[in-house]
Image (tube, rainbow, N blue to C red):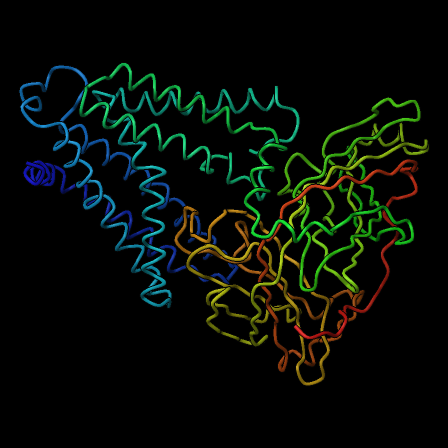
Length: 548
């Protein structure tokens, strides 16, 4: 009976199957045509097309799932004469078979073809296609299957999906008002735990779908199933506002090597001096740079700051200001945003496992002007992640093209202005959370300053879980990374300059997270006005000589 139902659905829906398959092919071809090294208008338009095609493909998958389920609707009694004589188990199995073959089959082939034609091996391409297909099945198709199973018309299906969206928005914005402190929903390494499409969120929705579908097909308990669906949505949105501390404690328990961070300490060190960091680019905020010394770091490690909470306390014990040290959005902290200066983290050990940095503090200008001249106590609560070097590769600075295990396929190109190298790496699966790039001339051993890039997402297993088949290593918002060797304004002198770039190499190091931990830094007495950014100095762009 399962095969008969499948054949019936195929005969009725094959035009729609073909249409969704075409969307999936357009999506694959659009991503295939994008050159990650190119930044001209054309590729930007291609990315817009690719993102649009991806969105339409997901809509097509959801609608086709609905149409397959509603060929034999469960709620109501209009189709009782058709489906009651059929075993509910057979009907459910037939719908699942249709979804796997007709909906996800073309997606799998499109993903496989995209990866193969990009230049990856068949087995890497197969792994990426299976991971992505499985992720979409669990995160999108099965929840849509559950919604379709508890609705009797297209209007009800759309209304149900909109209701879920409205509940999400209401809880999201309501939570933003009532949960003023940092939560696990924030963008950052632990966003996978509670954020939209995060681990707990998906686990709740998937568990609800696994309960709802058999409940409908085997018992036709529509009212009970709808209550479960609503409860799952409310629970998932509530979990999204799990406070930062318990969310981060979950991440701590998943550390690969919890002992690795036990020796790491952060201390205030005025001897480091003032920072030459950027000032804020907004009159509404003020940037301070507190000098800190980090000790206990091992060789070839990076220390990344996931989040820092700050409390400024007066001499009488009153809390004068509290919140996050930088921003409500850690992603703005890393990239600088539109109004924020760029942060000095992550840090790397220089000698004997020690490193220095300047902790960026962003305060409203009104608060800063009130506190800048008076002695205050500052308490900083750090959530930190220690990364350890996992792989090292090299690529020619001039028109390099290599295939690596850690970074995938990497290519380089000299920019049109002749002052920087454009590097892009594309791989199947998830890339390293942190990377460093160093321009070196192997003929004389000279190196430019190492560049750190952390786009940390701490999924506890090495699998491709994003919405895209291929990962651009340099991050979610950029398709390439630039390595400079000449300053047009002449303010920076590079050890490896334009006269050496033909013989130069870019050294790439991949880092993986090994330990997540917390530290508290207390500064008993400090004047905030002493730690504004100093004027930048002209310096040579070099890094200490050492073996990679």
